[in-house]
Length: 472
Image (tube, rainbow, N blue to C red):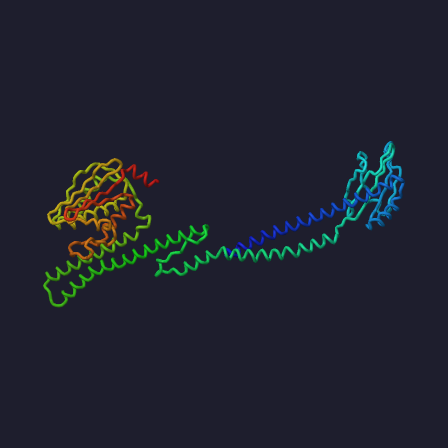
């Protein structure tokens, strides 16, 4: 209905106050009206009691004469009187007189024959208030004295009160709205401050945060959530910036090699064998560019559910020999031998394609950093509720300072980010391994000693345990 929170609050405040003030005004008016009615009943009773001494002297008074005397005494008009002499024995009216025959119907009210002496009862007859009092009661006759007075529906007091309420309520409402507007502005001021702070934050100022110390409790959680969002955005921007720089470097190196090879080749006529050698070098670098792009594309899917699909039961003891067979040619070119040991039957729950990529990348990394003639070992160990897939090389190893960062994209322990063309690496292999293992909810532990080699331990929950993890 309203887009503005302030207008919405003021609207509901206005409606609530209209209802409250209207109800309060009606309550006051009805209370005052009841007070006027009660005062009228009191006046009727006082007049009736005032007549009692006259009846003691002469119980056959004339109603008109009594009405005239009461007018002179109290100054009330119109005042109508009826006197009834009632025969208790026969149950009939012996005599009655009315001050005005035109208003005789006004006293068409029941007589309370069982009432005690001086008991008085009140009745409403159209615009009149009528009272009936038992004034006299002897052995055979009861005398009832009845009065009729016009209700004070047009009382000046009630009129003034109604006018006062009609004027006062809107004035009070305007004052309340002014106060409410001031209070709402003060209440919403922290929100405006937060908006101002948010508007001052840009992509170049992601380090700024909104101060939550003086923020009301109701919006403090929102501010803290926004600050956490800024933390995540800042971290993402840093990663994107670093990633862009590193990716640019990784793609620039092979392209530079390709360009250099071609330019040197074109400077003079070459033999067919020389052209062939150049084309082979260009092909190697082109394949490296393609591999880098493919792995970058795989990493862009990290936050999607696509990579986590197609999980099935696999036989790890059958998968390992197949992977080793495929990567053996790569190992033989570097004179490295892969030794399979401790293979035991192991059924796991995984995405076969992704798991192949992860294991191949670890083996490839172990082969690259192993010396010629060295051996890379791979095996499976049964440990309680999980299988341990162990891949161990005897290469150059990793220092303890570099070990926590080896799964970062493009990270290299030597910080130089350069390598021989024959190494055929992209700096993305272990980052992809970590991503795939996270998708599978597998753990990985690296143990390394510089100059002695590195051991990678992949912790794979057994099939039933893995299903429980994904179901939870």
